[in-house]
Image 1 (cartoon, rainbow, N blue to C red):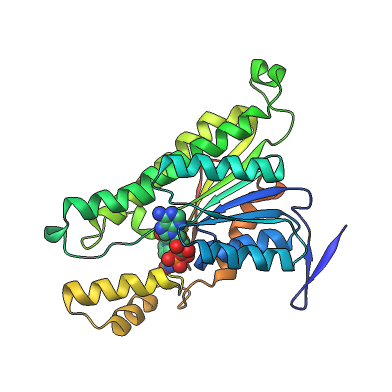
Image 2: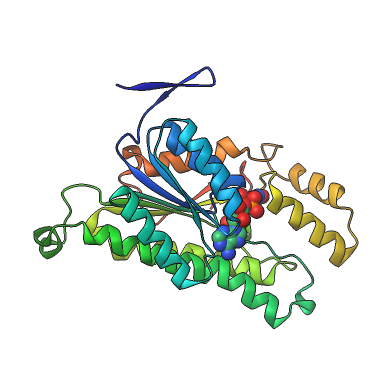
Length: 283
Ligand SMILES: NC(=O)c1ccc[n+]([C@@H]2O[C@H](COP(=O)([O-])OP(=O)(O)OC[C@H]3O[C@@H](n4cnc5c(N)ncnc54)[C@H](O)[C@@H]3O)[C@@H](O)[C@H]2O)c1
């Protein structure tokens, strides 16, 4: 079995020979996921609305000795999605793994949510997830032989897809009308895709974090401060105190869960939303 050194830990190369596209791979959870997949042997394309961030991730992946690609992607734009998927397939020959972490948060009073704010959040989180999964799955299905398509039972896995929802997608949030709706939709989109692509052994699952100390969590607390006058640090501390494991999730907690879902260990898991949230939600 091939092993690689990983900061003192011996890491198995579960994704040797695999190719991955990570949308939102320029920062936060997406960057951690992209690097984790690369450390475990995958060639990885990092796509992000901030091109320099995607380039920085791609440079780190190349530094790990893997093939990498940096892509500028606005996931709310269907043409951008098509271009990113086409470029990844052209560079790597196909996509085995797709992870979408691209997303934006919204926190303010229900009564103050504007149409523009709603449209912006839904376009990125909900529409972006749906059409990115569609574009990647189309390429995954293209690789399925005709006889397998006829029989509707796959001989092997034709892909792994992981989306990102949130504890805010598990139940309503008074202060996150658009964000919570978009994240609930991600759970539904994940289930629909899992059913649509199950005949090809394409597994589609969602990860649901609670708190991870990224720019998004800062944005969330700053928006709450602005809308409700709650001190951002106090609000963050109080939220974390409600997590049964009493700490935020780390980037590595998220990357490890994604890597599991993309591995053969998760071949019999599809359509699920995995809470990686310190026990905040239990359903
Ligand atoms: N951080 C948390 O506490 C938390 C909690 C629950 C769920 N999540 C979910 O996890 C995912 C990742 O969040 P994060 O904390 O890493 O956020 P982040 O803000 O740190 O990173 C998000 C990345 O997505 C990119 N992005 C934003 N809009 C984009 C667009 N339109 N097209 C392409 N890329 C775009 C950003 O540039 C950034 O690199 C999100 O879907 C988020 O909703 C995060």
